[in-house]
Amino acid sequence: MIGGGLGGWERGEWTDDTQMALCIAEEAATGHLDPRAVAGRFLDWYRSGPADVGAQTGAVLSRASAPGDVAPAAERYFSNNPHNSAGNGSLMRTAPVALACLGDDDALVGRAMEIAALTHADPVAGEACAIWCVAIDRAVRHGTGVLEGVREGTALLPAARRAYWGERIDEAVAGPPSSFAPNTFVVRAFQAALAAILHTPVPAEMPCRHLQAALQCAVSIGNDTDTVAAIAGAWLEQGGEPAPCPLNGPCSCTAGPAIRAGTSSAWPC
Image 1 (cartoon, rainbow, N blue to C red):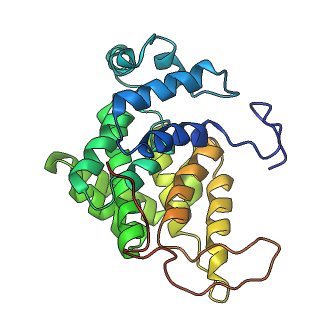
Image 2: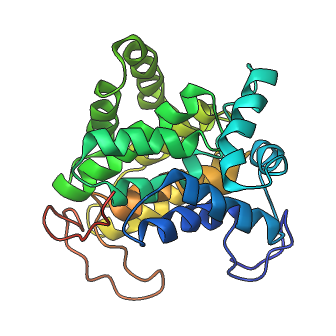
């Protein structure tokens, strides 16, 4: 990462996607993933003057003076913008929820939706987060592939919503990844990340290179590149991937999931 770009980033500096994910991860590391406390961390981050803030996230946080104001501000934004309140800003940061709630589907789905709704009150944003978190959970604990993981996540949604998401997943399977731009809408970002993973072959001799290749594919889709890459990377790094070897170093990987059931510590949800 050479720096510059949209937000005048420093060399190696991560964007708002990772910054907001860290807010969730730091709260989870306290031993209790409390949405109100996460809202407080979001506010502290926003007030620190980050180089970039998503439009919807900024609109919500700018209208909150205390942690308890954040979710109601998101609800008001959704009420005033019922057809434009499902941006990808909730999905880009959701991965730490999965790690905090490993093995507890009810807590995982509930927390994913609650934390999504802090800034993105449209239920479709929470659904996307819940599905992706389930996929990460399954990959971490069982080495489950991403397609099976998102299908298991869909099965945990209310029955009335499963067909919608099943169709969106089928579209990602059909691809190509380039068809999912623009992708600021959370569903399109979800599809772009999923398609980038699914349509990037795993190199037979150097499977560790799949992570880099899939992320390159995610970025090449265009539009909201860092967010699609952050979403895809959350699954690629946490789940059923061979451990990535150094880009310019020798490859010493072996095929198979990098993280298997029983080998990963989790924060209590």
